[in-house]
Each structure stands twice: as C-alpha cells, then as structure tokens.
Image (cartoon, protein in one colour):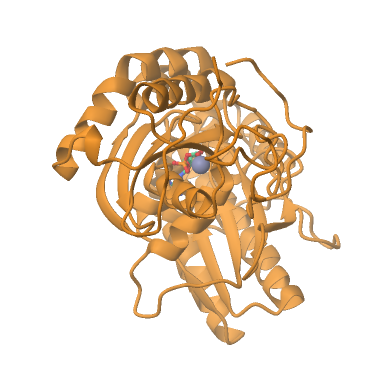
Length: 388
Ligand code: KG4
Ligand code: ZN
C-alpha cells in the first residue's frame, strides 16, 4: 500500500482547509477558507483537568484529547455549516509539543486524510502562531517583514518573519518560558492555575517596587531570556517571610506585582532591542502571556516611543487554536507540499525545520520525495522523533 495520503489536487481556486491542533492542553479544530477567512474555530481547553496539579500533566492531557478529538472536529464542521465533502485539505500540528498530545491530533488527521482521500500537511506549531498575527483584522493588515514575540506557557522566543522563507529565531528562553514562570510563581504564592491571570489580578493590589527581584539577563548581550532564577528568587522571598502559610494578602500582592513587573520589563527590553537590531517597525505579540495587561500597556508605549508599533491580535488567535494551523497549512498545500501517512510527531523542533518532511514534501502526483521545498523551512532530522 502506498503511504501517500491522497493523490487529489489542491488548487488555488477556493480552498477550505481543516486545521487540527493538539500540541499541549487544548484540542482545537478550525475550518479556514483561502487561508484567511475563518469559517469555524473550536477550542476545547483542559483547565479543570490540570488545575488540581498546578500545571499541565502530559498523560492527562493526551487522555482528554482522545476523548475530545472527534467531537471537536464535528463541532467545527457544524459551526461552519459544512460536511467533510467540502473540505479540500487537512493541516495538523506535527511539533513541537507534548508527544502524547501531538499524536492524538496527528493520528486523527491521518485517518481522516486516508479515509477521505484528502491531501495532508504537517505544520510547525510556532510557524502557526506567527501566521495567526497576520490574520487579525487591524486597520492595517500585518504583512512580513515583522518581529514576532511568541510568549506562552511553552515558549518565549523572538523571530524575524521575513518576506520570503522561514521565520528566523533571534533569541529564546534558556530555561523556563515566561508563562511557565507565571504558573510556577502562582503556585508558590498559592494563587491557583493557570497562573498568569491569577498573578495579574493579585498584582493589581500590589506595589511592583515593594520587593527587589533580580532582573533576568540584565547587562547580558543578545536576545535570550531566562526566568528560572527569578522564580527561585520569589521562592526565597516567600521563605524569608516565613513560608506560604504566613504570607499576608498584602505580601502576596506585592510579590505578584514585583514579579510581573520584572517579567514585563525583561520582555519589553529584549523585544525592543531585537526590533532595533533587525530594523523592524512592527512587532506582533502572540501566545497566552499576550493577554497580560501590563505587557500590552508597556510594550505598546515603549514601541511607540521608538517609532514602532506593537500589535496584539485578539486573544482567540494568540492562544493555541487551529485557525493558525489551517492558515499555515493552506500556504504549504498551495505550494504543493504534502506529507504522507508516515507523518510523525516531534517534541522539539527548531523553527525553520520540518523533520517530519524528509525530502521536502511528497508531491501530489508522484510518490517521489522531490516535491517543492517547504518555505517554512528546510528539511532536517534533528528533532526528537516519536513513532506515530
Ligand atoms: O498560549 P497558551 O494559551 O498555551 C501554551 O502555553 O501554548 O499560554 C498559556 C500561558 C499560561 O502559562 C498562562 O499562565 C499564561 O499563558 N497567561 C498569562 C495571562 N493569561 C494567560 N500570563 C500572564 N498574564 C496573563 N494575563
Ligand atoms: Zn502555542
């Protein structure tokens, strides 16, 4: 049996792509027409599954995905008012992410592509996040080149998004992601999960200058981030005050505000440094931490002072969703990129690499591995591979 998902054509006429995203703790499906028009977007979150543990438990995440995947895809089709026969192609997140979680979406997408004879393409999760910023309907639509800041529970990184070719990584966190730091510090302060909104609301009553915390990477060259030292500093501050049980509401609020201020300061500083270095006038900010009001306020103001513009797309496109996967997948499919049923999930994949696409993508007409090159990156085999 050929491993090719489908020989069917995918033309630029009018296309509807089903996107499936399950890289972490959201199971999402979306239908997108012509890579821009959102026909449906359904996201099934798992806050209640993970909140007793104060963080995402990978095994529980994948089990919940198994329970949810069919219903989520069906809900997206019904929201769009179409059946599977109207779908022209399937795009699915192949990495990076939690392996068990990725495999659920991937297996479902492969089965559907095989059963319906539809072209299939694997998408890099972070390429999806960046493309989502371009779908936001602002007065002036965002087009490359621009600077992208992805700031979520799993990632904190800066990218140059060029007019042609794959995004280029400029800097990333050396340890914890910013959102992960929010979640861990919220746990240290007994504020609940997810930590970002909990810290932000506690911080409103606090004084951001009350507690002196170390500035991450201060005085260091380059565009990398680091948040684990800051988390340790908060933990030591809690201990100094006699432990969590003895912490007053006031002390919690001051710690939350001081922590939030330092994270925001470091994000703003590194982001503006990158924009200046790369000479980019527009900065797109995506990921769950883009919801942070202090970050929005300070980054918008700081960018404006330098004659730049910070763009925060609507939250539905900032946090994990399948619209971004469908949109990124449409671009690949239109360029003739195809993946076959051997498509595998990879937990770690540098941006610009597509280890699941050995040989550059299977052309729709032939089973040779010499199809057009995926402009989201050159093919390599450096990711952490799993069997699907
Ligand atoms: O992008 P996202 O929904 O999921 C992934 O991690 O991929 O991001 C979730 C992260 C969590 O760590 C959460 O604490 C953080 O975004 N977050 C916030 C806020 N809302 C969500 N962090 C800071 N301030 C917020 N208001
Ligand atoms: Zn994400």
